[in-house]
Amino acid sequence: MATRLKIGVLTFHRCINYGSFWQARALVEGLRARGHDAVLLDHHSREVTWAEWRCAFQPTLPHPTAPSDFRHYAAKARRFLEAFHLLPQSQPFALNDPQGLDRFDLVVIGSDEVWNLHHPWYGGKGIFYGEGLNAERVVSFAASFGNYSCHWGIDERWAERLKRFDRLSVRDENSYWLVKGCTGVEPELVLDPVLQFPDVGRQEPLSRSEPYLLLYGHGFPDWYAREVRAAADRQRLRLVSIGYRNSFADEQWIDAGPLEFARAVAGASAVATNFFHGCVFALLAGKPFAAVSMPYRHNKLRDLTAALAAQHHLVSEESGADQVRDLLRAPLVDPIHESIARLRSRSTAYLDAAIAA
Image (cartoon, rainbow, N blue to C red; front, side, top):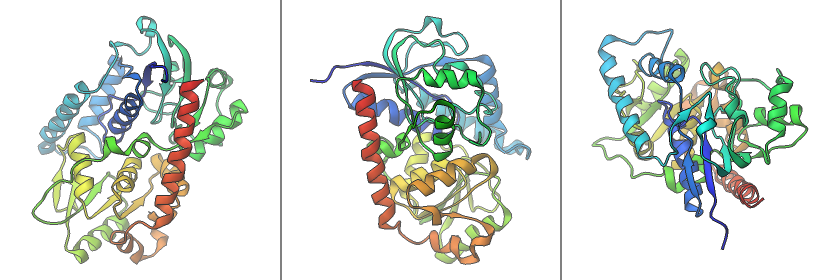
């Protein structure tokens, strides 16, 4: 029988963000399902908490939140807090001083933008580069640099920390080239935990009286908003915006919690998004989807769709007026499912090796 390990998962588990929540839950529950005593490392920081809550109530800056929406964003945040309390977690500790952290056999750093040095409040926190951890071994799983480009390189002090990892894996090509360039090590390219452990994120579909197209994200380009609106009208679907206000939608479901989000994707006819995990959950549920990238998330969306043979699901204004509408009614093609299965097998092999080493 394999040894039961005490594993700490270090990630952005308290973000008021559906993707951050679900990737954290999927990874820790996936490891527990493999027979290990896995918990999320429950780091705290007043600075981070303040920034997170400010973003929760003003998520669409520089466009201000309408006063009438504050109560909806507050309700959304409360649902996240309730969901956080249900996750297996370590004793709380200070993000900038993890000295009181328990000893772990293994710490897994990732998924999410844990290495993004330009992240507005987590950027440059040494703990995500393995600093100060009380562990026998430290590995990464599906870590990302987010919008921090591989063309910029990283300072030697960060590179030296990455070189100390026992094993390295990333979830996108941009992060692959950054790690390889600064360490000389070729990290494994693996799936985001939501796709790696599909049984965690798959939820009972939301039951509604009429079919709907789910809209997830904000700050959409005007041309994309027009095409999504036209697609919903053509298919006679109600356009439901989840998590954020989008004025071109029929319905604003701002206060949905993370469980409701997963159920909403599962019950949707299709998904329109500019968020990484909007694509991930559409892929998990096998839903038609059309994604548009914005500067902050461009690296992630480009590399995700390329890795899974889904490049055509990432649209631009030059793609043609009909592409968005066609994608929002067409089933996912077989090469996408085959790519997910292949990467899931590779990711499982990586985890086996990382845990057994």
